[in-house]
Length: 103
Image 1: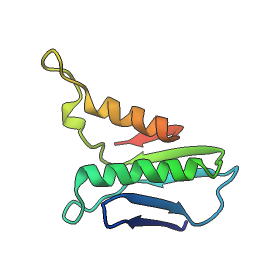
Image 2: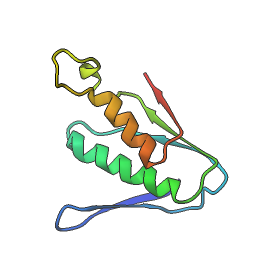
Image 3: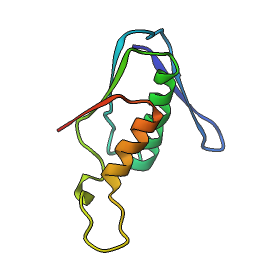
Image 4: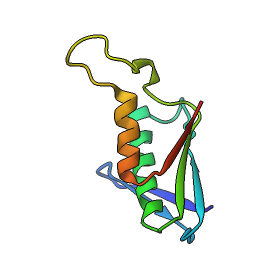
């Protein structure tokens, strides 16, 4: 499908869905270019895109994550540490994702 991103001069991101997805099953494949894109920037881009798709009222929204970022930190080693992959999935759920596929 059609989608576009715009980065403003101050660094803010805008995501736009270019076609209607209302009442359709939508799959968002998150693939990033390790050489050209900073990890945290691409995750925020994904969050904004998922929110943009959700605003179009799809039947179900599935995010496909071939490589779950921060997965090396999947457990707490010391008191006071968070679990980043768990937070990432919660943020995606909050943005509007219904399901996730990871490897």
